[in-house]
Length: 208
Image 1 (cartoon, rainbow, N blue to C red):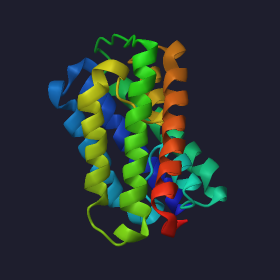
Image 2 (cartoon, rainbow, N blue to C red; image 1 turned 180 degrees about the vertical axis):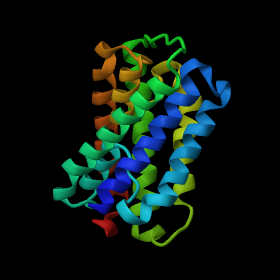
Image 3 (tube, rainbow, N blue to C red; image 1 turned 90 degrees about the vertical axis):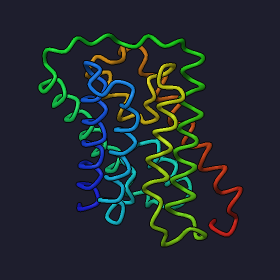
């Protein structure tokens, strides 16, 4: 149960940071820096307990990469989604008076942007936090957090920069994204995570 609670806490604070920095333009152009930093510190805080996924697409990729037990997949995703939704409601309470305009992304570019940077995120997670060649390192949290930072700066204005199905659900609850668009994130993020796992296994045969 400890690892599930760690996943809940990490996802909660990641989404809380997303909401508080984006709703009402709280952090302006620095929002990606805050979001990437929140992910980084939560990974350093909870990575030794749960692996620090905080993202159903990461859990899928880590499971496909044979670094997560099958019995943990559904509970991990469930606690991640619970943390994300609870954080979304916390943001709505904290930012109750802020005007929110839902992002209306172009479908094709948004699908590609979410796929590419979810692939990058899961690829970095697998190679820095699970690979035998980087075992015992102390930099994986920074590498993973900066991957989200890079993605948010690069394509945040195209797709919203979720790279995470739990975040996608949360931004829909907060009104930052329209509900009819949630399929874009679910499809692109899960496929990106799965393809990253295949790439990891192909490039790291000793880890299979």
